Amino acid sequence: MATTTHDTGKVSEVKLGVQMVLDLHYRPLSRKSASLTRYLTTFLSAVELRFSDMTDPKIKLVLTDIVEMKAADQAKIYDEIHILMNTIYGRWTRDYLKEKWNPFSRDTAITLIMTGFDLWSAHDTVGGNITNSADENGACTKSNVALCEDDGLTFSGVGSAAQAIAKLLGAKYDFSYGSRSCQTYRGYLLNNYDGTSDHYNLSPCGKEEIKKEIEGSNDQRKTCLSGGLNENKAKMEVQESPELPFDFFNRTNPCNLKHGAPSCKPWRNVDGCKVDCCLKQGVKEAVNKHDGTPCGKGKSNICSNGECIPDPRKK
Image (cartoon, rainbow, N blue to C red; front, side, top):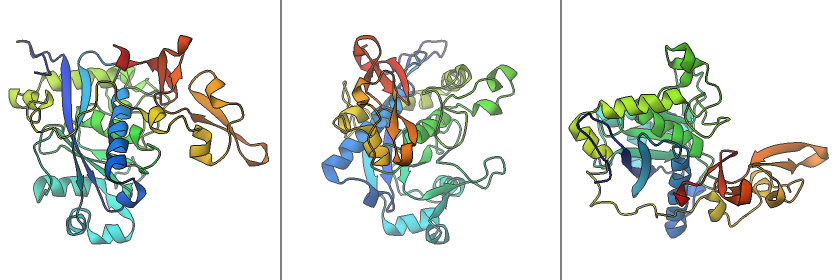
C-alpha cells in the first residue's frame, strides 16, 4: 500500500493517479507518440517537484493514462461558441463533466485536461486571467477534473498544473484564508491565478490545509488517494529517477528556448537558478534555468522554478 494510515487518520504518503487528457488545440502544439509520452511524463515529474518539500504527507504523482479528446466530445465539453472564440470557460467545463456527461475514465484520482485554448473565468476577482481551473478538494471525487494551459513544448504549464493539483488536494489561494498570518505569505505557489510565483512551493498554510483535508477524508477517498484504485491499472508510471526538463532538453540554453537569443554568459557557468539573456539593443532579461538543472554546492541540488532545492531523487 502506497499510503500509511493510522487510527488517528494520519496519512504519511499520497500517491495520485493522474489521467492526462489532450484536447485538439493542444495536440498540434505537442509532440507525438513516444516523444509526447516522454514530454508528459517529464511534465508531471516537474509538477511533483513543487510538492517535494512536503513530508506530512508526501505527494507522489503517477501518470496512469494519456487520452486524446475526440472532436465531437470537445464540442460538447467546451461548447462550440467558446471554441470559435479560442477561449474555454473552466468552471462551465468542469461542471458539465461532473453533472451532465463525462467520456473519460473516472477510475483515477485526477483527470488533468491539457489545453492550448485560453482559459477564462467570469469571477470578478480573477478578471478572466487564469491558466488553470480546478475545484478545491476535488481529487478522488466527482469533481476531480482540472484544466491547465501549456504550450506542449517548453513545460510552460508546470506551475499552472501544480496550482490545479494543490487545489484539488484542498489548498486555497493564500490571500483567501481568513487568518492574517496566511495572508502575509507572498510569492508562494498559490499566490495568484496565472501559474507564476516567486517560490516553487506551497506556503505553510497551503501545506497545512492539504494535510487537514486529506486526514479528514472518508476511507474510500483515502484508498483512492493512496493509489489503491489504480495500482493494477496504471499504464505508465513515473520512474524512480524520472527525467526533468533539464534532461529532456539535453542541456539546451534556456535563453535560446525562451527568446531565441543567447545568454549573456555561458549559462551552465552561472551560479544559481536564473540566467540573464542578452536580447536586442542591449536589453537583458532573466529567465529560470530548466527544472532539474544541477545547482548549489557541488551541484548536489537542482533548480525548480528558479530556486535551488534539495534533489528528491537522491533521498
